[in-house]
Image (cartoon, rainbow, N blue to C red; front, side, top):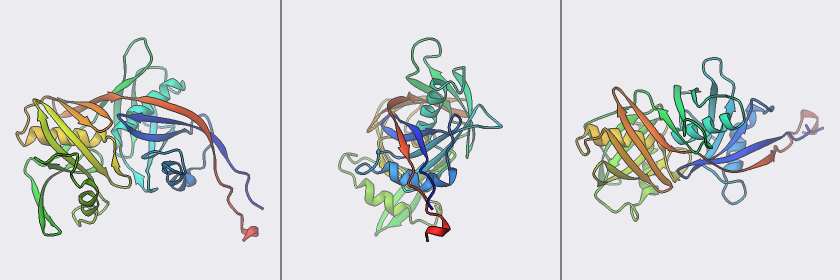
Length: 284
């Protein structure tokens, strides 16, 4: 015999083009063990829904809600700033929370989120307290294919390497360099690589190669680390920096010892998914 296929609803959302398939596991049952394979399936932009991964809305004993995420290749992710904003909006829209200021548990700790606008009107954006983001003020060097790259190592609950460039980002070989950084011993679990140029007073342009997903339209945690790297290295004064990404803009603001990230959180569409039935031992 085979098990009956599980069916459940999903919501496709994006934050500045960084898109995910979201599944509410508070109001419906969901087999957690299937999440990794499902993320690969739904992320496929030709045979699936299309996205940078899968994010589950779950209950939390420590915060208002919990975020569980998987990258497009099925690997587990620990933190996603764009996904976090969208998850908070989804929880509010579904009635899982009844206020616009909430705490979200992630694998990298609890983050505070304020849904915008704070009063009235439909939620269209959010501001996230990214906690104590870290970045090296001095650049480190690594040689890849006989070329030396300088990067600033950072951490926003997930690992980052920020590379400042004078080149035009449009034609820069994001994929080959980003993939090469995944092989470095310095980053045993992979790394999100930000390719950044200073494009104006307190303004950065950025493209990102994310571990487990490849190049994405935006990376919220990466934008936060890049903005901090620009301030710490003396490239920009701050305290507020606008980061322009392929899919939109994110405002990063330094507030004492922490950084806040503000940007859009938008629903694309809703639908229903069916898991492929699992064969039992008697079928094998």
